[in-house]
Image (cartoon, helix red, strand yellow):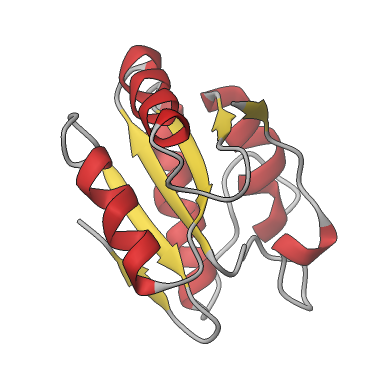
Length: 134
């Protein structure tokens, strides 16, 4: 697994977190996130390395894309509402994985592994919609 690094292509034109083609899954513990990420990589379910995000990094890099404070500002877009959910969970110590899974088959294969652990939240960023995978 590799550390997360927020890239310009992972944001909307207004700068809000929106990594098209990725599954973003959150787990209550680091151990669960690591175990799932390692399995996804071992089974080669993604063509790109899995990214592991600790709670602090979610708050500092992902959540801040919707505003400049620790608590995201209100927004009319669903992408901001989704990021606010990440803020709540990261504030409770949840870890996240980002997995590149651009097509439906890859997404389902990734989710079969994710569902084997207790996960708190999972979304797929498609071109025009954020799909709830829970």
